[in-house]
Length: 137
Ligand code: SF4
Ligand code: SF4
Image 1 (cartoon, helix red, strand yellow):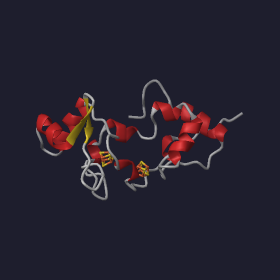
Image 2 (cartoon, rainbow, N blue to C red):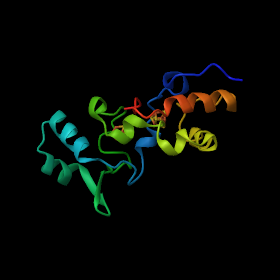
Image 3 (cartoon, rainbow, N blue to C red):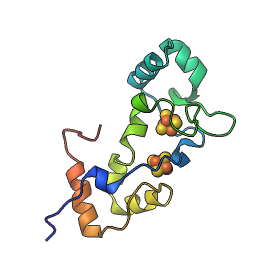
């Protein structure tokens, strides 16, 4: 029986490589995200959407710069303290927390995700993080 569990900081440490900040349509922004980011960069929320977002269906996503990266990527995330919920949660999102295989697949494209952990320890640790009070945010 596994009694030990690892905390989120032991399972993941962002290497700030920016690989997940590249490509179209990855980062949805909620209105709460928009308000926070707009305030941070001293922009009006409606203008923020026009200047920094593209629409994916009916939902705004952060726009891409010409180099293919998120408009807020410049060797580092320029809005790190207020980055969108999606970016803050990664990789502790439901589809990854409930599926070890998914964790290991995601680790292939994210160097911050640890994989040198046994399935048993990883499973118990991810279950602990998957708590109803949503401490991941
Ligand atoms: S791919 Fe992973 S390690 Fe690289 S910036 Fe994104 S979250 Fe961090
Ligand atoms: S907001 Fe920051 S962390 Fe999120 S995709 Fe853009 S540059 Fe990357």
